[in-house]
Length: 537
Picture 1: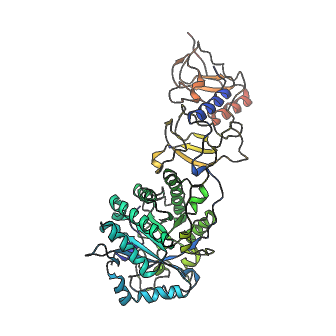
Picture 2 (picture 1 turned 90 degrees about the vertical axis):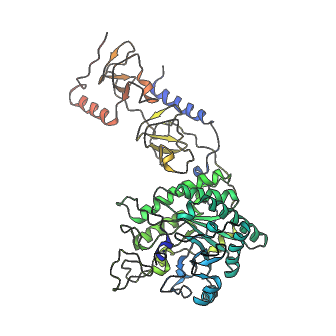
Picture 3 (picture 1 turned 180 degrees about the vertical axis):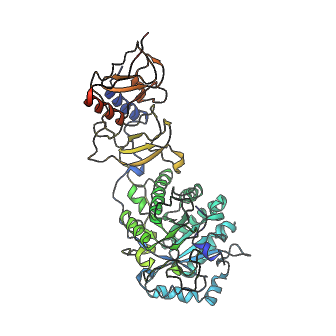
């Protein structure tokens, strides 16, 4: 995806046996190959998630012009707000500033920011402070002295008396691995200090996302935080500015794909950090932030319908948070704004007809940001692995020594997977971080009503029975038991049963369901299919 983010707008001004017995043997060998009964990885668990009270808070661009009166929300959807962005000072990198334009004190004077923050709280709202953005240096990027870095973060938290922070890490801030390590160490220290003072701190890590999930830099950022001991309230992904996406999908559909992929990555990251979490719990440690209306990528427009669809998905999965970029833009552009495909800081670029993105996205989300800091993430019990049974599996069960060609479907640990390309020995549920690291695509679980896999067959006599002494050539068809096979090339003595495990190296291939149906049809119409002969020597 393009490395733009909420901040980009502002900074522009910013994967000998009978055939049935063979299948059973494959199941047994496959299970033994990975240890038989073992604990399943966290993403396969289905324990109910801990109670979660999702919240909504839109981003408000503090230094944008015209200024947004976030302190006077039009409705309860604007009650809580994420103020953006605190960054490193231009000349004094360990000094926090608003967008490099104002120190904390200068913002109090020039923007009346202190008074406006106080008003939000007076009205029962909560303030989240966001650090970073796409254009300027996040504090950890340019402040290289650990003590001063912790002090800089602490100054902001103390100054605005906030208990929830948002780390918007992208662009150069995200690709700088050393900065990531400094950031993780500083936040871990900050969180520990505040815990000692009985002032829990909720930490959100906001990252760019592609339809395929977090980038490698993104997963590294999460891993750095977990390794340092940061107890993340969650990972918030910027469901926007994809660039490379399926244009036949709506923006909500692409966002749901991105969230689903990120969920899988987080399951793996927490497992690698010796903090296994259930599938349901990981959803409650995620958030989504769309860019409402016209995105920086001209072909991408997030509509009011997209907002409703994303909100419904978030509610179903119990995502802890929804946000949006930005509250400043939650209105129809005026008639004087000529080019609606050019992103505006102060309007959405689409006709909203009086509707509010904040109201749609925030519908039913009654939780509050600071509650995330009151919860401690702990390892969760891991369920035993699902034992696959050929009597209930809709596809053959994966085996270690099996070879699988593109589009082959198999069952493994209670789930159905499909091969993206030729593969052998690659675990279907290998905990990878990027989809490109595995030849398998998870399709979904084996369902209670699934019919068991049945090897396609034809009546005895439809074709000659396979004989090891016979020479077969390309196109010859035989039966092994009742299972039909066709020779791919010259063969003698090679049993077709090997094709079940090694279709590429076997001179035989099993007939497809469509081919078998055609044979059955021709048999009904007037005798067995002709034209198939075998040669003997």
